[in-house]
Image (tube, rainbow, N blue to C red; front, side, top):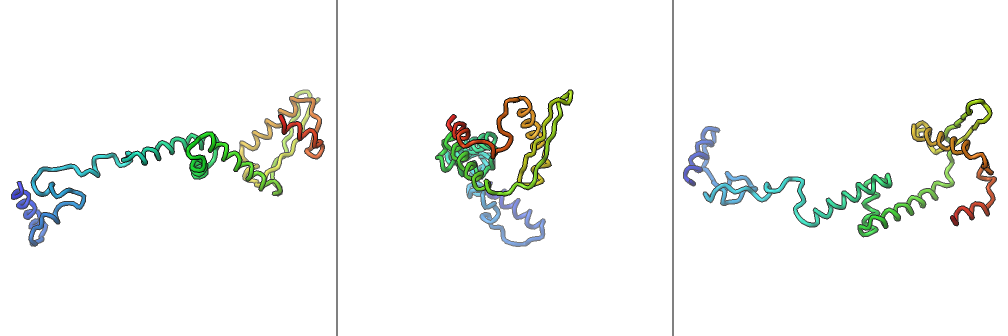
Length: 188
């Protein structure tokens, strides 16, 4: 078998115009074992026995499972992949704890934005059939990009209908709400 391989390799080199001495170890690919060239028969390199995406050890398998959890968390929370990974790592893999961590981070982020001016937004108006009931509602946001989205407009519409469907609304502005009423709502 070795002689056949050497002759074929020499013929191939001659046909290519190379008149050099054939070196069997140089002829084999770097990833192929020496037994492949030495005549023990073709062996499939270990590198090729696994699918290129298949996990090769338990740690890689665990990472694949973690990605499933990360994707699930991303769908539930709407947060980015890196934020979900960070929360899961901080929670040591506990899904519920990670969601709670993300919720707390969201509250902290909202607290940082509390003083920021909201100069964009939309004024939503609605007049009910018969023209006896109407509503004008101003909802602000930070950017005009948000104000132009369909989701923002839909939110304004839903809030408007909630207000119209509840005739017993006591307060029109946040400034009109007494602190006692706010504390009472927080305790619920």
